[in-house]
Image (cartoon, rainbow, N blue to C red; front, top):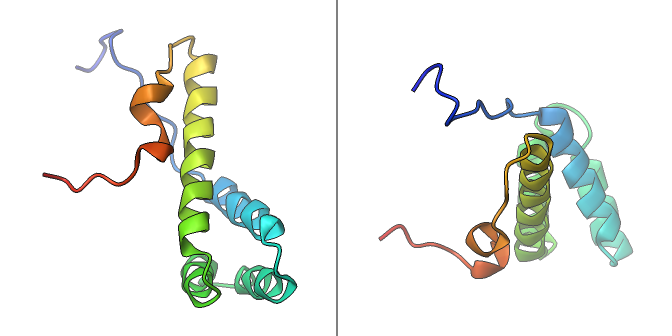
Length: 102
Protein backbone atom coordinates (compact mmCIF):
# COMPACT_ATOMS: atom_id res chain seq x y z
CA UNK A 1 0.00 0.00 0.00
CA UNK A 2 1.43 3.30 -1.07
CA UNK A 3 2.36 5.48 1.86
CA UNK A 4 2.27 2.55 4.30
CA UNK A 5 5.18 2.20 6.69
CA UNK A 6 4.79 -1.59 6.38
CA UNK A 7 6.49 -1.56 2.97
CA UNK A 8 9.71 -0.09 1.64
CA UNK A 9 10.85 0.28 -1.94
CA UNK A 10 13.62 -2.06 -3.00
CA UNK A 11 16.61 -0.50 -4.73
CA UNK A 12 16.74 -0.55 -8.51
CA UNK A 13 18.87 -3.22 -10.16
CA UNK A 14 22.46 -2.06 -10.44
CA UNK A 15 24.11 -3.47 -13.57
CA UNK A 16 27.54 -2.23 -12.46
CA UNK A 17 27.20 -4.18 -9.21
CA UNK A 18 26.11 -7.27 -11.15
CA UNK A 19 29.13 -6.86 -13.41
CA UNK A 20 31.44 -6.65 -10.37
CA UNK A 21 29.93 -9.92 -9.06
CA UNK A 22 30.88 -11.60 -12.35
CA UNK A 23 34.40 -10.15 -12.06
CA UNK A 24 34.74 -11.37 -8.47
CA UNK A 25 33.52 -14.84 -9.44
CA UNK A 26 35.97 -15.02 -12.33
CA UNK A 27 38.81 -14.30 -9.92
CA UNK A 28 37.81 -17.36 -7.85
CA UNK A 29 38.07 -19.80 -10.77
CA UNK A 30 41.24 -21.82 -10.20
CA UNK A 31 41.72 -23.10 -13.77
CA UNK A 32 43.75 -20.35 -15.49
CA UNK A 33 42.30 -21.04 -18.94
CA UNK A 34 38.70 -20.98 -17.70
CA UNK A 35 39.37 -17.83 -15.65
CA UNK A 36 40.85 -16.04 -18.67
CA UNK A 37 37.94 -17.08 -20.89
CA UNK A 38 35.43 -15.76 -18.32
CA UNK A 39 37.35 -12.50 -17.94
CA UNK A 40 37.49 -12.11 -21.74
CA UNK A 41 33.72 -12.69 -21.95
CA UNK A 42 33.20 -9.60 -19.79
CA UNK A 43 34.65 -7.24 -22.39
CA UNK A 44 32.32 -5.21 -24.58
CA UNK A 45 28.63 -5.16 -25.35
CA UNK A 46 26.70 -8.32 -24.51
CA UNK A 47 28.98 -9.24 -21.59
CA UNK A 48 26.19 -10.68 -19.44
CA UNK A 49 25.09 -13.20 -22.07
CA UNK A 50 28.66 -14.06 -23.10
CA UNK A 51 29.64 -14.60 -19.46
CA UNK A 52 26.71 -16.95 -18.85
CA UNK A 53 27.47 -18.88 -22.04
CA UNK A 54 31.16 -19.11 -21.19
CA UNK A 55 30.42 -20.29 -17.65
CA UNK A 56 28.49 -23.14 -19.24
CA UNK A 57 31.27 -23.92 -21.73
CA UNK A 58 34.01 -24.08 -19.07
CA UNK A 59 31.85 -26.10 -16.68
CA UNK A 60 31.38 -23.64 -13.81
CA UNK A 61 27.67 -22.89 -14.18
CA UNK A 62 26.62 -24.42 -10.84
CA UNK A 63 29.45 -22.66 -9.00
CA UNK A 64 28.49 -19.38 -10.71
CA UNK A 65 24.85 -19.63 -9.66
CA UNK A 66 25.83 -20.45 -6.07
CA UNK A 67 28.25 -17.51 -6.01
CA UNK A 68 25.65 -15.16 -7.54
CA UNK A 69 22.93 -16.30 -5.10
CA UNK A 70 25.21 -15.68 -2.13
CA UNK A 71 26.19 -12.26 -3.49
CA UNK A 72 22.51 -11.33 -3.91
CA UNK A 73 21.69 -12.62 -0.42
CA UNK A 74 24.55 -10.54 1.01
CA UNK A 75 23.29 -7.46 -0.84
CA UNK A 76 19.84 -8.07 0.63
CA UNK A 77 21.27 -8.54 4.13
CA UNK A 78 23.18 -5.26 3.75
CA UNK A 79 20.10 -3.44 2.46
CA UNK A 80 17.88 -4.73 5.26
CA UNK A 81 20.53 -3.99 7.88
CA UNK A 82 20.73 -0.43 6.58
CA UNK A 83 16.93 -0.19 6.88
CA UNK A 84 17.12 -1.77 10.37
CA UNK A 85 14.99 -4.75 9.31
CA UNK A 86 15.74 -8.26 10.57
CA UNK A 87 16.90 -10.82 7.99
CA UNK A 88 16.04 -14.50 8.42
CA UNK A 89 18.83 -16.53 6.78
CA UNK A 90 16.84 -19.76 7.17
CA UNK A 91 14.20 -18.49 4.75
CA UNK A 92 16.47 -16.90 2.15
CA UNK A 93 19.51 -19.17 2.17
CA UNK A 94 20.65 -20.09 -1.35
CA UNK A 95 21.89 -23.39 0.09
CA UNK A 96 18.26 -24.57 0.41
CA UNK A 97 18.31 -25.73 -3.21
CA UNK A 98 16.03 -25.10 -6.16
CA UNK A 99 12.32 -24.43 -5.87
CA UNK A 100 10.24 -26.20 -8.49
CA UNK A 101 7.37 -23.72 -8.36
CA UNK A 102 4.69 -26.24 -7.41
